[in-house]
Length: 145
Image (cartoon, one colour):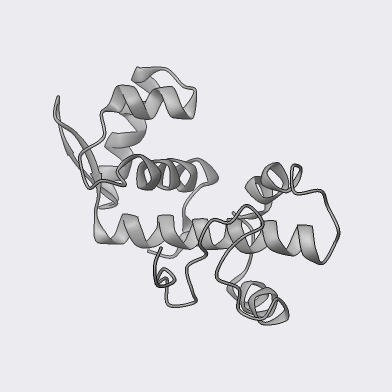
């Protein structure tokens, strides 16, 4: 499923799930709601929508886990975010403290063509200005990350 067909909210949930399930464990809907700053009922509705799209596996009362398709979208959004942070800081001179919020807004609308141009212009970086790893164009994490 193309990322562009997914709403910003769906992309944000997938990105958050990716971070929360970093140890491979299922994520509770309550933990997801807390991180997204929404009610558990709202998070539960979104989880149902994500499951219907095949982006998560949900076992009621046992939690949520990204599918391969959901993980791919999440890593792509993370890549966009981190490339944008680096571009905003290094090329446009924004303070590192200010780039996160800007990248949050722009990550959803960045085209693949512009992503590739930013990646090339920055010399195919492996880490953002905060030191976090940036997945490459094949959505693989840098070695040692």
